[in-house]
Length: 233
Image 1 (tube, helix red, strand yellow):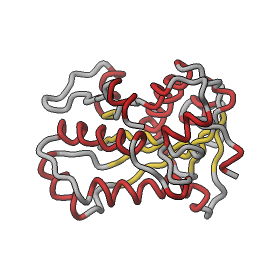
Image 2 (spheres, helix red, strand yellow):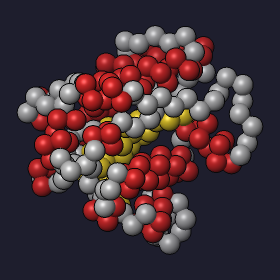
Image 3 (cartoon, helix red, strand yellow):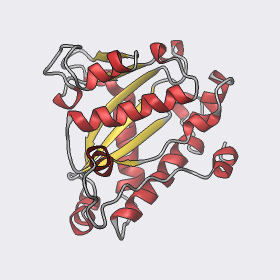
């Protein structure tokens, strides 16, 4: 099934709770680190983006998805070919079920002309790719890394996302990295599309609402240097 998709056309999106990770919890409390991870993963290549927040809401899911779709459009991706798949959680507007009501699904389908689909109720394995990433990042990042500040957390998260997309091979995908699979599948699209920032969604929300930034809680966004982008695969 996955082989039928082109890279960056079919995505799985989910939100991971971080406060139940023992190795992370104390640091989260001490340095006021994020409680939630918002994740979008490309089904074909495994390319994955993450964002973090203290809030768990449809508004935050919408902000990240809108930012990601706008990013794809900038690189010439036809959004009418793009699908975002989610579970039936309230953070993805499942209680509305009306595409005309402003929110997550409305933004995807009406504002950006992409597609959205909910997985069948009770079939969480239908979102297995993004769930697999959540298990991986917990094991390789949250259980291993230490942080001295919120800013350092976002810096290290950006490094891990870059490592995952440009360096780390996936043996379930033929021992290739996401950037290798993407280049094989979409040679006409610039590989810079894979260089996506890790967002602090709380800060992005304040920016959108034009609220004052709380001291020490700015919008930490770190893109990989282009030299790193072009050398990692």
